[in-house]
Image (cartoon, rainbow, N blue to C red; front, side, top):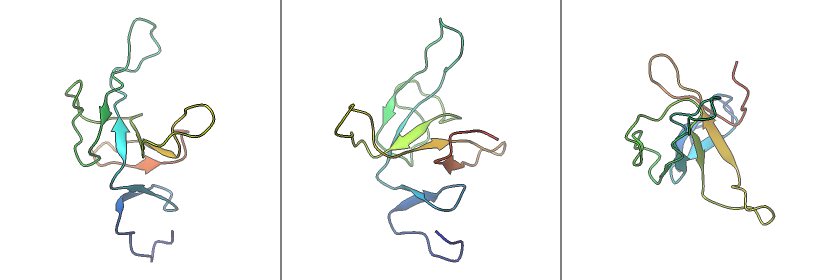
Length: 103
């Protein structure tokens, strides 16, 4: 998507790279509590409304590492289809990306 193009009508947010967008009908998965420590477990709550930034399972605000998808599964492994990852800014605004390597 070029920066001069208008956002698609079904877009929640254009990705950081500007070449894709998170659709309005995307669902998101909470990553709260994720840790390298073996005794800690991430929330993993599934949230139906991409506009609601509070997890319905744990009550925490959507944060780094949360993912959004369309709830589709691939034919092979039962994995979710296309998805996006959240990298929040210090001011609380969101950057969604299909590039999962944090700078």
